[in-house]
Length: 109
Length: 115
Image (cartoon, rainbow over all chains, first blue to last red; front, side, top):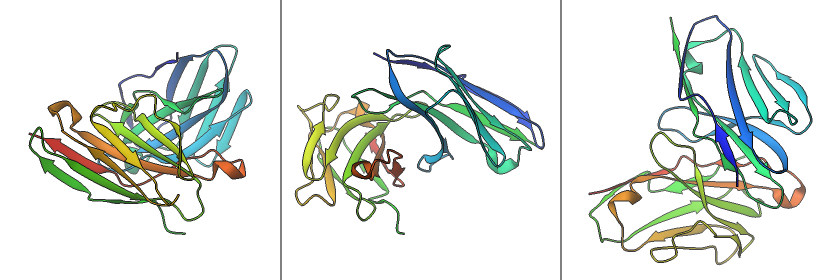
């Protein structure tokens, strides 16, 4: 089976940089997704990593290391609207997505 | 492009009652998913459809939950009878998996409270 761990909560200041980690245990997978979910709303797609390395998309970047079973989402120049939960999801071979518990990020002024 | 539509947005019922949720995926998306998201947790897959066929329902509590996608477009998820622990948000998602893209697009969800 898959075991996905994320920190439960994080707090950061507006304008700062924050890194949200995701560790997983799976025998093999197609790729890893990051989703953003504002309170009371549906998850929205942020990034998809297939290969090791950093994928940059504006203020958000996502990193994957398959050998270490590790990914992170990096948010730069934090804004108040970035306060949300961030969900890591693994897509194992021959199976469906498995979502982590999510990290609730609070951005303070 | 219109997103995934779901209704109702909120539902309050008493335990042992029945409830049904509706989902209309993004036009042209062959794959449809139903997830259950309990407060403070990530979404958990209940069932996946490819067109009108069930691909994965391994985590669906089949003694009380059922789902159908008769014409390969919209879908309904039913709970009968509901239990207190079914209180959650029920998310519908779709993806154009048959075109090689796996990204799932979520609807706004139905928030269910069982009293």
